[in-house]
Length: 356
Image (cartoon, rainbow, N blue to C red):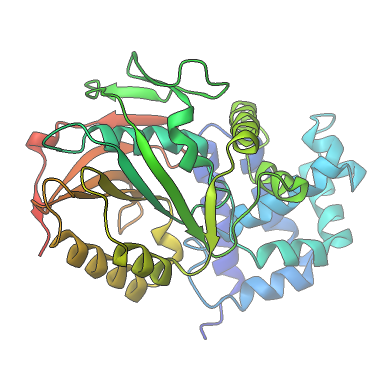
């Protein structure tokens, strides 16, 4: 096990603070900078971070910490922290230090679990990928989502979209997703979902008040539109409960791909900001498994794989589409980690890979 240093932890909080500031969240940046300065007040949490066995950035440890503090603020305790989040004062260090000292064990328990953002805006990227699938004729999709969290993106066909000025989805939906669009508009075609199911190691249930609160705590407090969109998607999920199973993504996908595929349906494996939580060997195993399934695909039983993920060097988020039976991969777009903007690319001009 690699033992981290105090400098490693400080670098991660300051790195994430800078990224938050660049993404338009100065309040959250200031909170994380205060955590960096006041971490000594939470020895249990600090020791857990020092003993972390993996990459702090990949595990989003700073954002886990943010979720814990936001959860405390939403509950109203400690009061000085809650007042900070209500913008009644700007004593970041005092409020954070008091919260770390009083709620160290609560924070440490939050750090044990991964972030659960289930960001609804990413559904625009997934939907755009579905519309870009090179099918020989229109056909419904069988969605298989890895890392579903609460399963809110399994309801993507129930949301309304504005994609570069073009509308898609359900115009009557209470959830409206309109990422800032760069580049050409995508080709908008109707998307029909025949079935949608997903898997998560720790799935959340929209019908559970504690699970709903956990999701809302992971939103960024100075981005109220994200919270509003999430609340709307949770209401949709109450009316249309997503089908999510608890389990390992690799095992679950093995079982799903072993099931016969309906004639005239496109099977679509999708995930967003999920691969970063897997070890390299699991990522490779999933890739090999999907390619093997793709080798069996036909024009009447096609398979597509859509990922909205960080590049290996974590400098960009790409929307990648691999389609079988051709096995071709294209980068359709680059985007914001939480889906705030999408830059649509000329896929015909992008380097094309062919899956083995």
